[in-house]
Length: 628
Image (cartoon, rainbow, N blue to C red; front, side, top):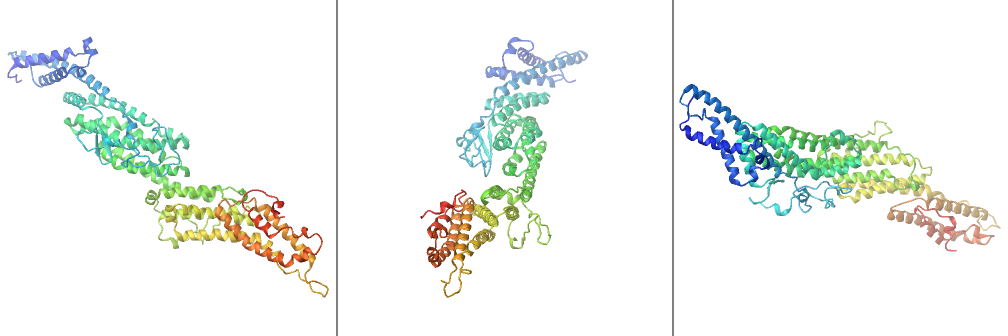
């Protein structure tokens, strides 16, 4: 065994180092237990690190003894080896405590409120359409376009800046430079002495606690997949909004900054070690974060979930490049794979929900007619729904790749409408799905119209509902572009045809009373008009008009313009016909007894009566006689 060249020098160096190590042995000194070396002056910390270096050098020597006897030298070397090992253990225990203390002193939750800034576009909006806002995380979350961003003053590209910008990632210096240097110095010595596992465990446990604190501030709860799936959807909606905001901070700031800190502390001892520390710290929190999105992606499908699922999909798609950048090592494969799989399942869930929504419209079973033939709640729901779908046009065009499963005009299946795609070849699959939804809705409405006993009211019901569909399409530029003006013209023609059918069903029989046929008689003593037939004709007209007025005043056309247009159309047919009939035959009635029993209404009365139609309120027939 080779002896040192200058054993006296090594002995002296070791003994001095040993004294420093033992002076800070917390198991033997009350003072050492109460004080931390790196919290005292820098000189003391530097002395301790030098002492550890000296002990480590001594450990690499065969002996620190100057005994010239070979046998004695071997025995002394064994004793000295044991002594050095003991000293190293004491030093490592102390350094572990110091390492933990520095980490805990400088580990705290991120000030997450300062990371939300609606004025920036670096982070994408949480959703295209927020139907209500969630104020549980930040009081400033009051706009559909709220964005996540660091304060502008931290976005300068300066070496001295607290934040370092890399694409959308914003890395925060989680600890001051001095603390990082101390941690690096301690880590080097622990790892070189074979205490890598202890170093990683201490680092991971402290930093995980800091991440947990940040999670709590961001509103990220510790929920299992089962916990998430047991929650009511209303409660989940606000949690999804919160998750989207929080996930952007976690990936782009929190996890990215943790990775940077690991690199700063452990870069001097190898990339594998800094990656091991990083995964020890963030793997559990990352799984916790993604478990929420995974639970949503595999939850029971229903139409109301589509838009939040699309919000989640868009947010995760936007984050995917950042996830791949932050979790870029082989050991973090599982995180990248989980994120990609969740994204795929969210896409599949969106496709499935759209298909199930189409089926639900077709099968919607309500049979009770809506009063007054007004717009059916199903029509409002479906059209508002597809208007929202059009807001997610860019996402859904990428996700919806196949045509809808439709009926065939040759199938003979009366429970499914026909749809011919021949005229719609240039449409995207998404546009075809939207058109198919409208076709299915109309098919269902046709079925519901058959539950009205009055054919006129059935036609009015179809007119109201198809007109509402047209107005909703016209009111959404995105939806109109996808549906197309050709199909829109077909829909317009349909509600106009329904209006025409209503007028025929109601007014043909009323106007039939105002014909001349059946009133003229021949004879030398006759005026040429049968007064009894004329009186009967006026009585029939009055009765029919009063019945139409009584019933159709309670019917409702909610759209003001459509209501006015139909009234004008009725007046254009009724008023001239009545005026002409009255002009031809009034004298025959007034020359007889009790003419007021037959000519009950003036032309002005009819003009006023038409204004009562379709208001949705009951009126009496006395209400018609306003001009007398």
